[in-house]
Image 1 (spheres, rainbow, N blue to C red):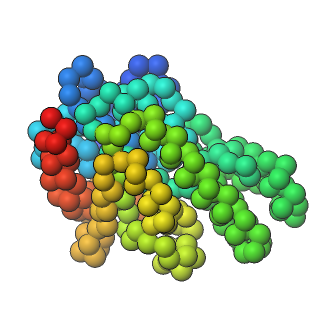
Image 2 (cartoon, rainbow, N blue to C red):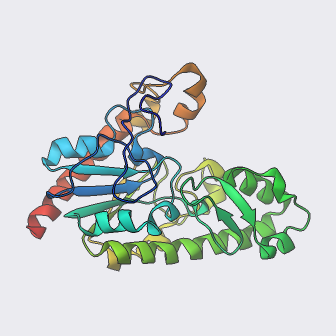
Length: 281
């Protein structure tokens, strides 16, 4: 991600803003003129995609869109970064992609402050609940969660409950720092619903993991709108068509949404943003 040229041959032109330690997708944009900020995970960043959602929306609305997406990023990659929060607070509008509840530190485990998919350590509480698990075996949170669920679905429910509570609290914190000129974006193959996570087709592979419609509803008073962009069956079936990746990256590319999904999301999102920008003018 920090390289000028990805091994696939796609230019990401990584850049930093202010004192932030996070590398974002470039080219670096000016922040002294009106702009719309986008924060989110891998899909907002646009891994393997030449023109991801923020670039497509910029073309439609005619206003600079600053891509602050972070590969494998969750709420923790942003909420504790004063530069990112200031950049969003000073934007004309901020689009916040809903990110998974598995990507944040909580009472049970800690994640890397920027690469939020990386597991760092289990708390003493977690070790007491799962005394039969060696947490030294884990590097990634999703792998750990899969093992914990397989070991004990009953105990796993306690973990999921904690992650959901932590997610709502952390999102309230972040949206409070950003201010009222923000919208939540649900950009996922999964529908926004209250269906149990284990009843969904993707299971623990779903993104955003463990987030429900009821959780998002708790945040509605803090934002201008909640925009749902679930790709059509046609867009999902397009798979990796139009993506840029090397043969060794094929599996990773197949697990994220392709250009057709981004194009549909931009078509849904752009008119809403244009309407909100007119009201804010």
